[in-house]
Length: 290
Image 1 (tube, rainbow, N blue to C red):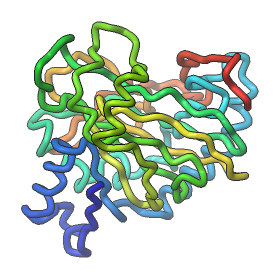
Image 2: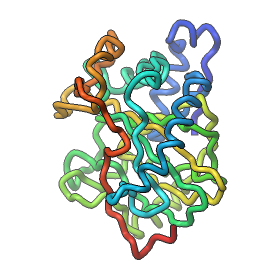
Image 3: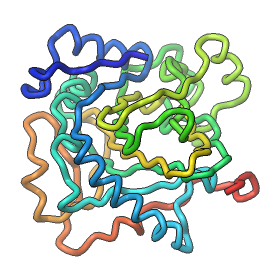
């Protein structure tokens, strides 16, 4: 897996040199994933982390807890209001430079959420793609149409539920949008294990993982005694049909102005309770052990 570290000068300018930018672009096209090290403030991420960890109990107390596949993985939004909004996270120029190089002009963000691998969990998700390919039975994959940006809020690796990823699978056209089910068959998994076995990357706080939304992955058990929260955004190609994104206070509209990335947000005047957002996805009570 390709990992790229910016120089101090690149952090200040918000631009990678052309060789690094091309390395990141090729990693997304070829492997489906790249890690950008140390591109955001650890202090800012820790502020969001502390609030999200405080929110876990409130979300788990809901009658409709938004579990993803099992009780070990919780869909969880970061707080979408001040003092938890930071440009180096939501409008990070180095990340935008990379996603722009792949998706082209007019790209936009229309997602602001995350997931938490709950402490002492023992269940794993089925391997799946967040979204499939544009058409079924394609001979070759199209270029990317959406890129997921993940910020871990604690250092993560296999010991605390780092997401399992399957490099290269974004080019496997087995999973298509029209077919509905995003889970990958055992036959396809066996085929890909021989080509490129999955891995659970070790990623430090302050780094970002950018992956093709079609790449196969799975939330993993977190056997540690500490929850593992992670934030997510999605940058979409200009023509993807999303009219309205996540809610943010109307007072933050100016915060999201950026020359390259548009944020498709629903700016509202009322208070936002982010702990009530989200619904359970393909929740299987019988297979959950936490």
